[in-house]
Length: 201
Figure 1 (cartoon, rainbow, N blue to C red):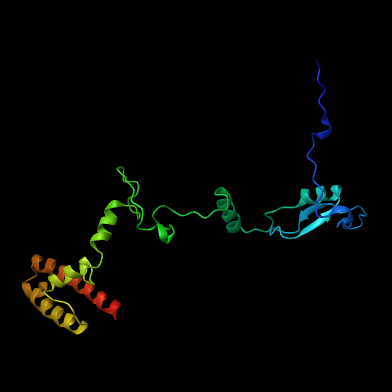
Figure 2 (tube, rainbow, N blue to C red):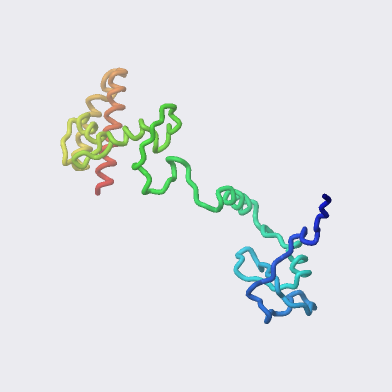
């Protein structure tokens, strides 16, 4: 049995604007007296439309560029947005919404989360550094290093630091490597407590 293909409906036709109805405006194409039954967007906002006849809506659409006049940066942003269907995205463990942070634990035997907020080692370090009695672990260690107790004033910290510098400075100990190592520890402890005091002020 032979079937003849009906080519009458092969071409895709623009559909008339259902809002236009029988009282449609004349075609917006200059000099055209046909009815404007087909919508074509005026700009990228797609909020306002021209009404054309079928012939002129085809001509308008053939020459209309949705991305016209975009800068290179705007075009790249458009491509990135289109790749995710215009939905927001964020890097895992870096810029995720705040309500996700600290609430997700991932088993990561291969260490793919290293350096992110999902890094198990980083989470453990953050847990250990959380304030205890109003102070972090680092601040408690610094107090112990300088042989000080809380509460602590900036004046008391400076006084203790000067005393320890006079005692342990390498110049006062014949350039001793051990004295130099000790001074580095003292300096780090001093910086930690000074920042804690100034931040609390």
